[in-house]
Length: 405
Image 1 (spheres, rainbow, N blue to C red):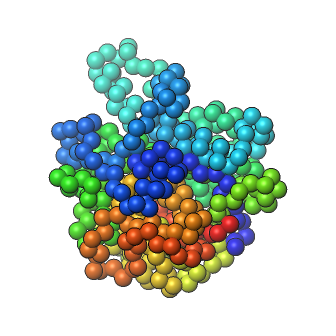
Image 2: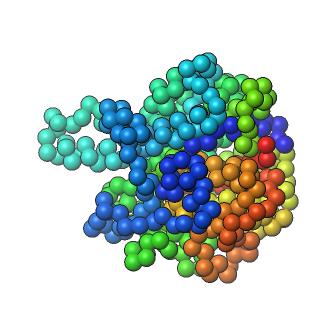
Image 3: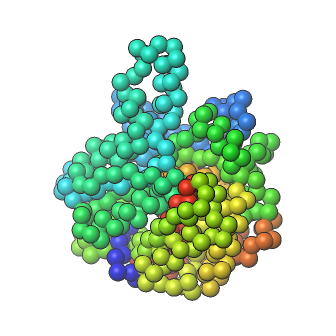
């Protein structure tokens, strides 16, 4: 569809909906919220989160390896293994110099930092030599390269909650430029720690529905009061379409367009007129060779915060002329922060592949100030072009255009 379409040949997901693309997709189709009381947040102003269920790094990665990695890297490696296998690729036989890794992350390893700070206060001599290798954000891509012997371009993109989508867009650009032939891309985040959550709570960004956690994340609902923080990872394997066809790979969908902008407005609040997010959306459409009337589905950023949902919803109504079916999968997963854009891009790929839009969980009273068509149940529909929106603190905006294979 676009000048620089790339093929999505592999997907891997580790989300609060489950470990694996299959369980994660089923959870969002079922509209099954995952928010619950979190024992690690006992005594905090907000005590709910969306955790990955049953994640055992010792079993999934091996004890020696797992203990040298922060959780944000553990999540990514499990998702990346699934994605590479799903793509039908064997790292033992590929040309590692032509394989890139581009991953997104907003923070890095705050759990490691907080744990080692407690050690520092007790005795500085006991601080682990693994502190920096475990918490630095770039280790997300570095450890993934080590895992697969990928010696091509290697970087971590940090655009707050747009990081995962920014990484996928950057990976597509690398393929278009001929810098590599395969890119392992996506995002991972594990920021549910006492300090980080206290910061979010102090900002007033989090839902305070501690009494009924399952209903707390309610994107586009009139009674939304903030997001629920989640953790997870989403990884996609991208290749040029011709290369994927030449090796007989299954193409699940295509990334056909990418738009990125900055609001240059406020450090945390979106521009009330949606100027930056509109520009990113229009850029993604133009990149894909499409127009506002060509979009059938939008996986919205839809965080369940009052200002974000209002700005995004009004922009979608103003710009997209074909009345596309809109959903936010954050009603199920919570807000996966730097991983959100990658996980939601994967959900967009699955929606296009299966021609099926998942519902917006917990949507009971749609905001009367919005005039968009929201999915309230799994809906089979024709999807030739879907958009996946991601926005972040600092006015960071990224939109991906996803088309049928």
